[in-house]
Length: 397
Image 1: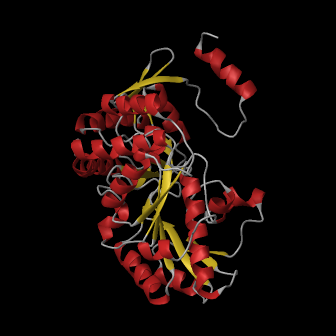
Image 2: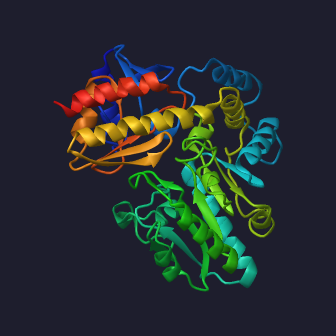
């Protein structure tokens, strides 16, 4: 095989058809740009769906992984390894949480969070009928537990029955949440900023009301920070913008910047009264290679002042998107925080995204009528200007 089309044709014969892929074979990356097999250059405003925060071909990141590969890639969780110990310490520091369990993905982190919440409640009263309240329009992953708390029926219906005892409330509607609470409620779970559901940030008043409700009734607050965490909103984790702390938090995506890794973190109280030896495990989670990635990512966040850049460039991106919303009647509004933004259109956006791809700009959607902007966190104003120019040319076609 030599041509891009030949590789695509081969993929169509061999891979399970669970993705509607664009007709491009990406080959390499550099900075905030990707290149396909034919050498075409693309400005990347997707970052592997909010994953590659540091951009591509970061020399220090690459060197750290190469060094770890030469030392030790994997061992068993029956033994300690230095990268995992170091990564846990650093992750605790930036999150303010107390205990860490490393997973291989965001969905696995959600699965662990659900188990921790149910075990916490079980140890209190010995019952096995506890309920979790999740949010409508949410997305937490496609494994069975994560899918069960995903508030979009189209993802769930073909795979029913789900794990059960899940109720759905409306994000930013405290009365809706309160109406679902019973003496069986063990956790309230939601994304601090809904991603797949359309870029909906949780409001501060709602967050604080839910947190107080959880405190009063000893219900665990679980925040999914898989997409909105790791600096994307201008704080290490989006919940830190609200001055609250969850009982359990999930993270992944930019945590490893391309290396498959996730984690769920708990408070000390939850850690001491939930999962124990034999309750939960993973073969690959916390392996030395994945944790070496976490270590260098967190080091580079600090060295390169990533959070400061997100605040500055995120404000500029929001300003430029607001200008587009004023200029074009087809755009209804903008919403989002930092470098997690969405443009809501009055029509489907699939054609716009394809036109942008043809012009060398990678964008993704968040629902049929929303363009989602989740670029590498190292972008500058010049990259925002370049993106806006291409997007504007697509809107005027």
